[in-house]
Image 1 (spheres, rainbow, N blue to C red):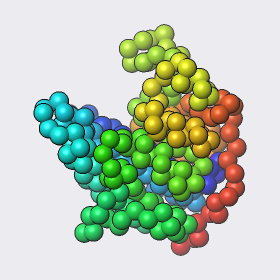
Image 2 (cartoon, one colour):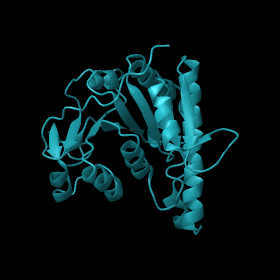
Image 3 (cartoon, rainbow, N blue to C red):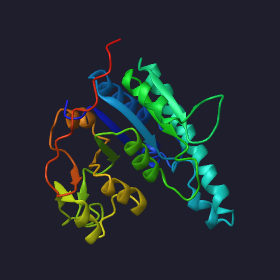
Image 4 (spheres, rainbow, N blue to C red):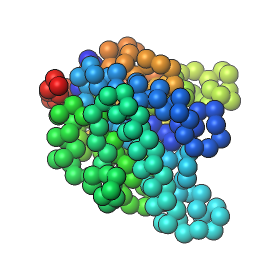
Amino acid sequence: MQYNRILLKLSGEALMGEQQYGIDANRLMQYATEVKSVADLGVQVAVVIGGGNIFRGVQAEQVGLDRVQGDYMGMLATVINSMALQSALEKLGASTRLLSGFSIQQVCEPYVRRRALRHLEKGRVVIFGAGIGSPYFTTDSAASLRAVEIEADVVLKGTRVDGIYTADPEKDPTATRYPRISFDDVMEKNLKVMDMTAFTLCKENNLPIIVFDMNTPGNLERLMAGEDLGTLVTMDGQAYKPSEKHAAPPKA
C-alpha cells in the first residue's frame, strides 16, 4: 500500500446523500464499505467526520444563540455521525473505537493519544468525534491536529468533487483540476481546501493533503494502491513518498 497510516476527513453534509437533512443509510454504508476495504488491506485508518448534516456551530449566531453553545451543539452532531459510522463499520465486521474530544463515557472513550495509537497498531478503525473538544475550531482543524498527533502519513479529504480546481467546477465549466500543488500556491491563489488553521497546521508539519472524490466507489482503495487520483498538496507540489515508520497492524 502507498500509505501505512491515514487520517480520512469526511463532511457531515456528504452523509445526507440526496436528502436535505440527516443521514442517508446508503451513503453511510458506502463510506463504511470503503473504509473497511482499506483497513482489511492492512492500512491503519483514523476518521474525522463533520456534523453539518445535523448542526453547525455558525448556525447558532444566525439565529441569535451563543456561538460557544452552538459549537458544542455542533460537536455533539459529529458524535452522532461518528456513532452511525461506527455502527455501520461494525455491521460489516470491522473492529472500531470511537474517541471523543470531551467526555461522553456511555458511548465514547475519551481521547488519549497513546490509546489512539495502540488501537491503530491493533488494526482497529479509530473514529475521532467531538472535534478537539473546544469551541471555535472546525472539524478540519480537528482532522489536521489528530493527524499530526498520530503521525499519519497523509490527510485524505473526501469530497464530492475529484480534487482542487482553479474555480468551483460546479459553477464554472472552464475550471481545471490541479493534479498536484504546493501549500504556498494554494494560499497564494486563495483556493478553498480547508480552513486556514487546519491548512497551516498541515503545512507547518509537512503533512500532505489529498483532496479526492469519496462518492465514487473504490476511490479510497485506489488511492491506497498508489493511483494518481484527486489533488495532492505537498510542500513543493511534487509527488510524495511516505515513510515506512508505521508497522502494519497484526493479523487477526
